[in-house]
Image 1 (cartoon, rainbow, N blue to C red):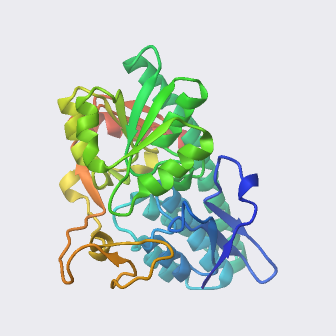
Image 2 (spheres, rainbow, N blue to C red; image 1 turned 180 degrees about the horizontal axis):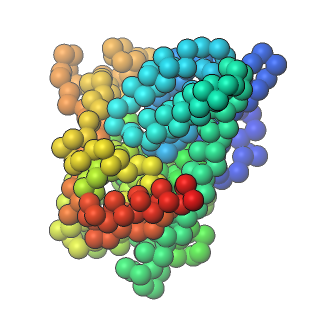
Image 3 (tube, rainbow, N blue to C red; image 1 turned 45 degrees about the vertical axis):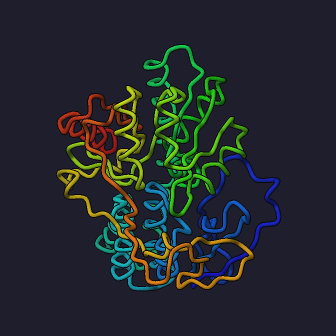
Length: 380
């Protein structure tokens, strides 16, 4: 069950937007989300009291972005446990909400394992629920720490590849604090450059059909005082041809064992353009986004979204007549091809930046070694 409420203290919020938080009012624990479908015109919170409400929030993209989905999945398991629901059933529903983002299943399984371990050790359901919550909070904290490390590593890489500062960065979709426990992935690198006076311009791809760049990245850039410019996705080629881009930075929803990167649809053509124009194409993502069980790009399941997201546009305060609740922009009955993601092969990726370091060139062996180092740090 979910309720929405408008925020009235928007001017008091820090630049690090609280996209998700756990609260425990007298009536029982809840998970509070910033509803990203309402941005940038309204800052509205969505209050989830059970896992089914969270599943719907994930599917509707009210909460989105690989790292944040992992955090949400873990909290969803903790919420089901605390509210006395079937944890295994909630975990299955949460894992299936969006198939491409591997972080979602990582978060769900981490909290579920903590819950089951507590029960196996003789704990009662209340103690097991507490264990799941502790695991979710730990993941939330670790993602914030990873965000800061990725920003530092990414900025160091930019300075190495592009000495002298004045970076002009092109980004696609949204990869800031709206997708993270911290300040994000690719956007966090641009933000670090901005804070140190080394960002000349952030070019923001509009990111059709749901405009995550226009609605969300521009929103975050404006809040942080960045110099940014919005462009339609199909203008990126002319921008690169004009020599106005020094590097392309994107996030990722899943990175296969061979280094293939699944990210918001439109990322792959940017990689091709970047290679042709000799511009670095850099992926920034936490180690949890690397999926060693997915061998290559062809093995990544790409989520197919409803066609009405392409054939209609959502316009606030305008009467809607389309099946999806938007204004039709195509003839009735038009079929639409609407993959949520595309896959960029490793040979087009200049580097993958993680909290554990940088992989460049991108190879299966280098990725495996990085993940092994990460496991040693986690278990050490």
